[in-house]
Amino acid sequence: MDKKFWEATGIRALRTFLQVILAVWTAGQLITEVDWKLVLLSAFSSAVYSVLTSILTGLPEVDYEKHIHMSKEEPDDSEVEDYEVFDYGDGEEFVDGEE
Image 1: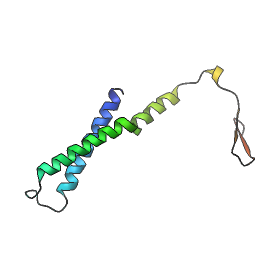
Image 2: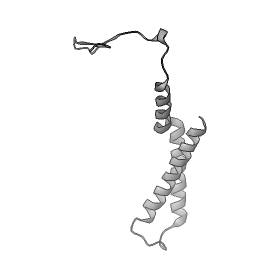
Image 3: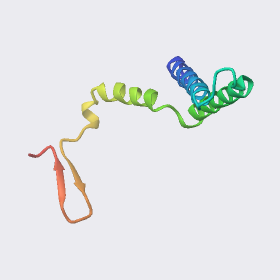
Image 4: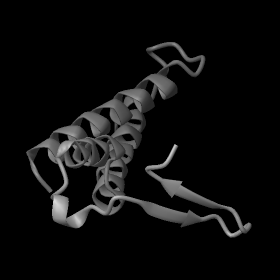
């Protein structure tokens, strides 16, 4: 887990924190009637769950960027075959590289 992962995790947790505060606060109550201790506890708990979820499952935005960077690298010619045949299981074959 690199710096980019932790930055994205922090942003996601902060967004979750703020979304919970806004959701509870705007639920039809006056600002003076809101139990702010409960709101902040709920928001903090949600942010912690967001961080744990990011650690356990990863972040699509970080994984996606790694995939893009990997796909930009040119493959080594010794690892690339000229044609690949794909069998879709229906008797039809598609040969990659042919038009």
